[in-house]
Image (cartoon, rainbow, N blue to C red; front, side, top):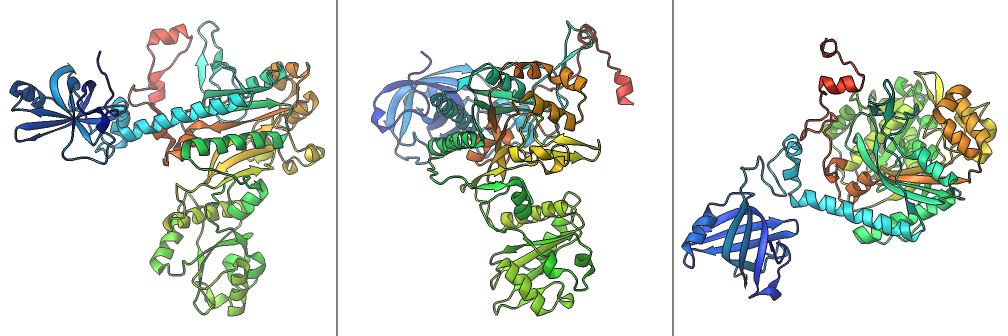
Length: 588
């Protein structure tokens, strides 16, 4: 028996028990004739005591143990004279009677502790060591707990977990596919699924009624903090439902997760905001509502007074920052520089302070009378000591997005984005189509199987940009944690959708003929949603990146630096796959 107890299990009630523990050496301390060693496993840390006076040979062996050696000890549980209230086993220690070294260890490249001295790249290279750190392990334990609760909730709601294929055909819409060459079918390729979308719709045609899957998905996209080339979805679909049914069911799941994982009881119905209003008042389709600062449009107030920047602008809008009139000129200049960065692209920023007496002092005073400034103040419902920040531009949507970045930046500076505070909402009524300037055609905002709002079907031919989707996203703290839609189940409407998206009948049949054929055999009304498991876990774990809640993630270049992937293949493998790669040509 390697152990009778784990390293996080023993308590004061276990005193005098003879126990066997196994684990890794966390640290070692020699004090006079005593050696203290902390031994660690997944469950915690226990202090071991070696007494030179009792057994010098044993103590000498203990002094030769290095960090991360794997050891087994037998000893008696004793009460600690100097207790440690920072660990669960801090009231006890083990008086060691026997020591076995199960394996030695090279000196690790960084300290295996919560506050490590290892940088991101080094820790990713030795990820198997990084996973020994308790804060990283806790993220994966949280992930496990969440998946168990998801399965429990959905099982109670009558959902069946069904696995769908990983090797599928490439789809033309959406992000770029990862492709896999087929050895047995020369010149032909599989794709890795961006989502199980088509298969879950086929399951609804098959009469499964309620499906879910915790599934790996793949997208060959540029990476960022909340995006990896492979990620995990909680993928769900339901038959005989309308939008309200899906929203109600999965709002229930969100509340279940908040209660069971974070101990937070959410009793209020999540607010809903249309995509149009989200863009108008927050400049984002995933607004962070932990704080206010709603946009106020100022074209009617500030145009036509001789300030050329505003007079020629298509859009003028601003935010009111409560109690921030004390911002210094240096701070305001830093905000101006921030919005002028190429990533944001604003040309400048105008600011105004509301003084204690109610008067307004702005950075463009020479163009505006106090009467006009008071009218602007009233538009914001601004009060003394408030700060007003204004952006303008010749593109309404672009300027709103710039103002959104400013809003988030100020909120960060003022500490308004508390990770222990949660603001949940639904964004609904997305556009069904958006115009692609490069391809000069309409593309689907979500995917080509999203149903239009029934009252907007009349505009599909005449004004596609006006058509709203029967789609919905769940947003928490400015992060889209899930999204879905009611699907098209009528073949005629689906064909019309393909037509607007520029598919010829032949191309639509080639790509989606099997789905259209299935719809001929009685497709029920259906809809669903997919949650990003990685984003949910990072939200609950208060992480800045989903990478920290994935066991073996890729870096920002899409590489696994631990196993050095992707990598070149042996020429014989390329021959088997009927692929030719000219390395010299690639280098040139």
